[in-house]
Structure formats: structure tokens, C-alpha cells
Image (cartoon, rainbow, N blue to C red):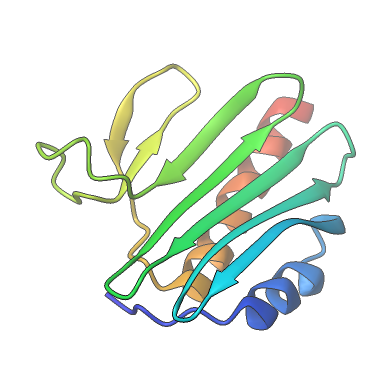
Length: 128
């Protein structure tokens, strides 16, 4: 797993996406090699939002990517609370409430691209 985290690279990746219309930095709290980061993106169409949360420690980066409108729709995260899932700790919370394997690996920039691609498919499906 890639444990590097560059906040400016994260923001740049989000701003480059045609799906993202606005990036809002909600929290940056850095102390030495640790940090807490929260970003909210307004998507196109504007009723959708993506919230990204990262907790960086010396040994790991915990992440959460959540798509929502008025209510949560889907979420990816790596909180280590589903050890039976094959991709543990990485998992996906589907819209139907199921918690399943995730294709995310913890490589933040690659994961953002996968999340944005998956969200595009979800939005197309919901808007048709």
C-alpha cells in the first residue's frame, strides 16, 4: 500500500475532474507527521456532493470518500472494522446497505480517480 499523502496533489486531482465543480477545504489540522483533512466537493449536477476525509499518522492513512445528496448514497473507507472482507481493511458501503470488497488500495491519487469514475457511473444511472 502506498502510504504517501500530498494534500496539494489531492486538491489538484479533484480540480482537474470534469465531475467536480467546486472544492471546499473544510479542515486541515497538521502536527508534525500527522494530520486530519476534510474536503467537500460540489459535483455536477449540483445536488451531489463528495466528502473526502483523511487521517494521516506515522504508520497509515485512514480515508473515507462519501457521495451524498440529501442523504448518504455510497462510501469507501479503510477503517479496520470488517476483517472478514477479502480486501480488508478497504471496503465499500453500497447504496443498499451492503458492505463489500473495495478496489481501493490506499494510494490516494489512484483511489481518487477510481472513486470519481465510479461516482460518474452512479450519477448517470440516477439521472437517467
